[in-house]
Image (cartoon, rainbow over all chains, first blue to last red; front, side, top):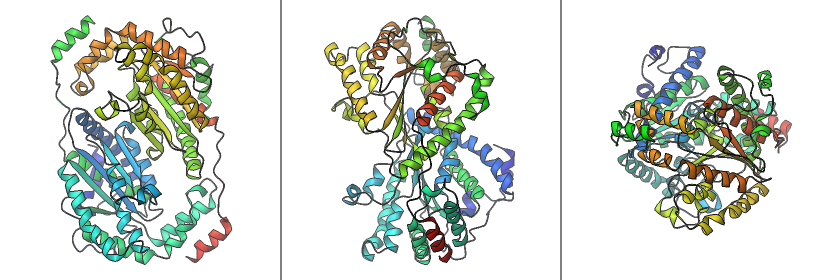
Amino acid sequence: MASDNSLWKSSAVDVLRADPGFDLDNFDRKGTPGFTGNKSDGERLLGERGQVLSDLQELLYANGRSGDKRSVLLVLQGMDTAGKGGMVRHVIGHVDPSGVKHAAFGVPTEEEKKHHYLWRIEKELPRGGYLGVFDRSHYEDVLVVRVHDLVPPDVWGARYDEINDFEEKLVAGGTTIVKVAMFLSLDEQKERLEERLDRPDKFWKYNPGDVTERKLWPAYQQAYSAMIDKTSTEHAPWYVVPCDRKWYSRIAVTELLIDALEKLELDWPKADFDVEAEKARLAES
Amino acid sequence: MASDNSLWKSSAVDVLRADPGFDLDNFDRKGTPGFTGNKSDGERLLGERGQVLSDLQELLYANGRSGDKRSVLLVLQGMDTAGKGGMVRHVIGHVDPSGVKHAAFGVPTEEEKKHHYLWRIEKELPRGGYLGVFDRSHYEDVLVVRVHDLVPPDVWGARYDEINDFEEKLVAGGTTIVKVAMFLSLDEQKERLEERLDRPDKFWKYNPGDVTERKLWPAYQQAYSAMIDKTSTEHAPWYVVPCDRKWYSRIAVTELLIDALEKLELDWPKADFDVEAEKARLAES
């Protein structure tokens, strides 16, 4: 483990976990909780710890190939421009693509709309040995759906318990769920959208709907607050990550994933064959 | 483009493409065709050209998000230990995981066996904007299936034309198929298998069946030779890559992918909104 990791005075897991009574209104979105270093420390650390993450992911994959049913699922939720895509590129980008199951959940397709909202989620769950990554998730169905009144309140209101049950079963089946709620400030969002309008190589990331959604900011914050309050469970807690500083959010999520993988206490799978006998067979081949 | 790319005296595309009459028996598996540099040049170049590949992939993804239906599909075929997994990790590892659709095709599952052999392939094809990666593919059905007599000769014999038709339709639909046949020597394979038996962190990669398959080496070479002969088409040629030197095979495939992406002549998508009007809306939000 890199000695520079001592720049964390409290672990990301401890300091970012949403405990009961979590107060989103007073959450500092420019903060770097637990971390004592600066941006250049953070960027250097991302490379070092990304390698640790990569090594742990290979262990997970190796065990999966040997029959271990456990997996890790990273769930990323956050407002537009919070940095979900960059998180995938710069954090998940460290690990072997062969062991990653990535899925992005946008506006439901016509096909998806015909099914229960968890139908499309279940199809994308990681198998044993895989690191699943959800860019948005089933939580859209208590966020955008709630803010835009796409279904009546008693329908979305019932989903919190349903999601908790769903996740509890996943955890019981061997999936460690790392739920990350990414929060940036309204001002920082404006700057990031301005950049997309200033640079022709960023136009494709801009959607006029993003400005429309900004006007619903308070309703979204309320929906996020309720989501965290009702679905930050013992088996699958939320980690709330300030994202005005991208470098911080990336090292924080790297640490959350490393922690999840370390807790699996993985070792290289034992040989399920006679090593010496195989060496002899190979020598003769 | 990195100036060091001048270390290629002939382009990878030209020198590796399997032309009619390609002779696998006399193919040098330790060669570095077209490349004048050494291992350390190759390793440095992989980083530089990996970044070029990453930039091109982002362009493809951006265009896909804007409605472009084109995609690129890398098909990796090769004997055990040829380095398919390392190719994914070290070449595809350079690009944003969000834009990659990776699929590995092993022994067919019970479900897959109930369907046509192309059924499982079709489910994993990349959508517009994506870089698909197949670790093994539909070609298993004219390789392992042929060598082990899993179906009668007239059945596998009919598949070459069927695969050509299948791929021609994919290409017509906008998919550039980059088919890479990876060849290592029998001696190099032995060394790589020995390493897996010498290192407990590699045991999970070892399968006693690999030694059994070594005894079928000539039959496999014959099946590969027929595959290249019958399915290296104008619309989807095979590139035959010597793999005894991993560093060479990785820079070669990086170049094949860069070439495929450059031929799409991608540019950043134009804004489908009024940029100035959006700036005004954003400023007021």
